[in-house]
Image 1 (cartoon, rainbow, N blue to C red):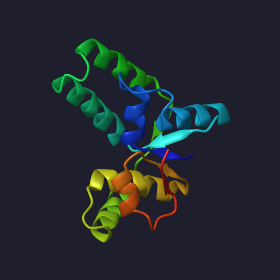
Image 2 (cartoon, rainbow, N blue to C red):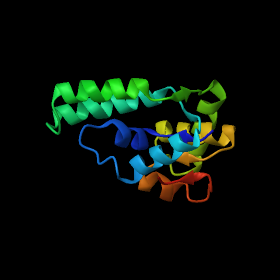
Image 3 (tube, rainbow, N blue to C red):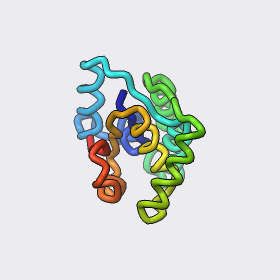
Length: 137
C-alpha cells in the first residue's frame, strides 16, 4: 500500500512530462505489479494547483491542463487520510525543521500504512532521510 505524493503524480499527468522518466517508470512498475496506491485527500488539490500554475506560467495551455486534470481524476489512487495523520504530520513538521505540513501529511499516511512514500521531491527526501520508508521514484 505505497503512498504517492503530488511531486510524483504531477509527473504522471502533466502535459510536458516524459513518460519514460523516473516517475513514469515507477507508474509502469507499480501498475504491472497490481499495487494499490494511496495518498491523502490533499493530493488532488496539490496536483490541480500545479496544473493551473503551469497554465499561468504558459508552460502549457488550458486544453492540455484540462486533459491532465482528467487523467488525474482517473488514476487509481485511494485517498485515505485521517485526523490522526494530520496530528502526526504536525509532529513530523516540528521535528524536521518546520518543513511544510502538507508534505508531512504524505509521510504520516505512509507511516500509518507501514509502507513506502514515493516522492520526487529531493528536498523532502533529504529532510526525511532518517525515515527509511521515504524513497524516490
